Amino acid sequence: MPMCAEYRDWFVLCMRDHSMWLRCKAGHQVREPRLDADWYNRNSGPADRFHPTLEDGLRHLGH
Image (cartoon, rainbow, N blue to C red; front, side, top):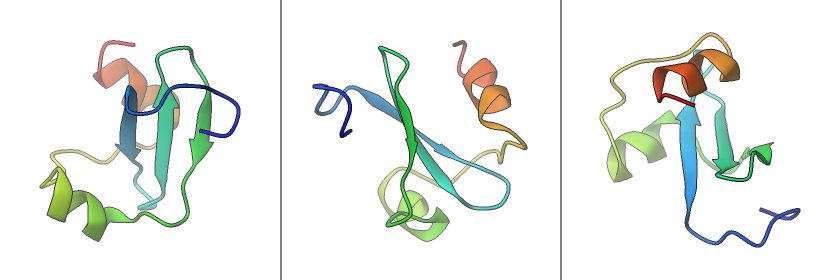
């Protein structure tokens, strides 16, 4: 993330609109337009849930 020194310690969240968000443990978050649901499904998926808001996704993960 540009505003954080974290390299690999972040969540990847796939939203209902198929946008992808990255969030580090320190709470920095950024939308990542170069990733999409297809990328997520190939690398981490399949997606088991789409979240209507970023906050809902974080609650689902216990954060």
